[in-house]
Structures are given as structure tokens and as C-alpha cells.
Image (cartoon, rainbow, N blue to C red):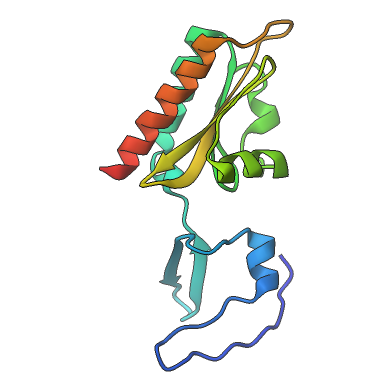
Length: 163
């Protein structure tokens, strides 16, 4: 990423405003958690926190299990990128950024159940922290079983975050 060269002052409460341009580029919204840490050269680093990354192993195991049982591609994402994939098109999705359409679904907190895809947001403490997407095998439609499998996975991952 290109350095922006923006200077901000710390106020009397120790706050600093992250410029709108940077928030837009990094998709940081009001209420998003940020990790704050320093490196060995004394720099302060802000990083968007991904609770789903904390559950990377659970997310991966869920994706593998659901994919093997359903025969579909199963994708787990946080609000920024894909964190786990299992199925025929794993290489097409892993570590890719969440696109505008998926981001909109996650932020709406509403599930999508269509013949060609199922998307269920993962909600922890009322906040959208990611999603589970199920895509069908070639020439097949998705039904209620795939939708319920995505709901179970989203609920399971959310409960792991809440404990």
C-alpha cells in the first residue's frame, strides 16, 4: 500500500482520528475492532482485528466437514477476506478479498438462500463478523439442507466467539 503522509495530532484524551481515505481503503467502519501494537523500531501499528482468524482451525474444519458431506464448495470469510475454503474451487477463493456483494450481505445481517448460492452471516454479540457461503456442485441447485448446514456453521462459529 502506498504511504499517504497524513499527519494527525493526538487530543487530550489520547485519541487520534484515522483519516477517511484510509478507513475507506481498509474498509474500517464505526465500531470495528482494531489491534494496536508496537514493533521493535518503536512504530505503533493499527491492524483491523478479525475474530474469525482466531477461529481459523474451527472454520477450516467446519468447511472441510460440510463440504465432504454436502459435496459442495464451502467458504468461510471474515468481513474482509476468505479465511477457509473446502471444495472443488478452493484455489479460486482462498485469501481473496470479500467483494462488494458479499460485504453488503454480511453487513445487512440477512441470509441469502438461492439455487446457486447460500450465504449466512456469522453474528456474534449482534455484530456481523463474517459469513458462510455454500456453492453447489456443477449442474445442481442448493436446497434447505445446504441452508441449514450454513446456519449451523454460522451459529457454531458465533458461539465459539462469544465464549
